[in-house]
Amino acid sequence: MRFKNYGLAPKSAADFAFLLHGFQYLKPEGVMAIILPHGVLFRGGAEERIRTKLLKDGNIDTVIGLPANLFFSTGIPVCILVLKKCKKPDDVLFINAAEHFEKGKRQNRLQPEDIDKILDTYQYRKEEERYSDGTIILNIKYYVILSINLVLSDPLSYSMVFQGFVAKYLTQEEATMKRVKEILQTKKTGIISIVPEATVFAALKLMSDQNVGALLVMEGEKLVGILSERDYARKVILEGKSSKETLVRDIMTEKVLFVKPDSTNEECMALMSEKCLRHLPVIESDRVIGMISIGDVVKAIISEQHFTINNLQQYIMQG
Image (cartoon, rainbow, N blue to C red; front, side):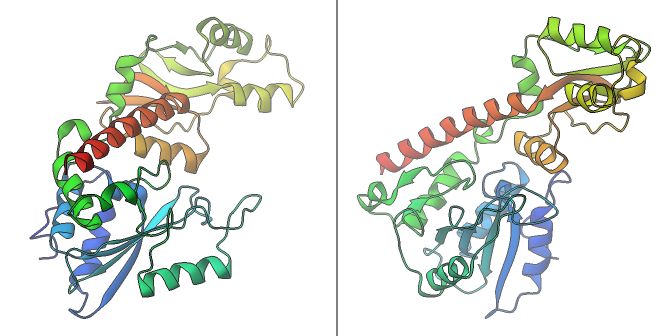
């Protein structure tokens, strides 16, 4: 019953499944708050349909963007979605609290005054430039898109502009996040691999020749590990070993995390950030088809930001 009117969230990102489960048990006069990754604000497909329905039904009351590195379990920034079953459908408050925190060596934290400001802004629905309802925010981690000054010239309210943008642009196939398979299409090199019996010196020579920071370790078509510059630094140099006498199999990382061609850039970035990875093999039907780096993902995300910003500017200016 809880998914009947919204559809199922995708298996690759079940954030909306948790949201809808809680929302089902929310009383008509109740308030629900849930912490979710920023991807829920812009991912396409099934999540776009769920998000659009929640917006059109007036169930999303407030979106609060929080800083990165607040939690022990993950370093990615998150947002708080506040939902209600009975509210004005044309009133959505956005709070950008991502810049208000105390920076720590390994973990950031919200100071009491930061928390008070969020609560005060939410309770009284205050507007403050570049903090609350004065900035349109789709992905609070990466970009603040346009000033509310543009929106004030439009007869539509701010929240209706946001809803219209979601309905008009995030339903388009091209507006969804790019997939890993699209990154692979832009890469000039194919699969660069080495056998586990090779020496580390040979592996380093191959990395230098191909200008890459990691190699897939393959036995035939089977992926058995990954060798990175980090492995060499920690397991050869620091231990005083010789690269010409040490084999790849002795220092390679055997437990390899990977992504699929249909994985999104955001999913890749979250995995790389959480596990401190710089390279991810791409596997399809148990077959290795390539490898992406954190640089590849960052470039793709920047490209998506430009596309989204341009679309939002066009939408608002059209009135």
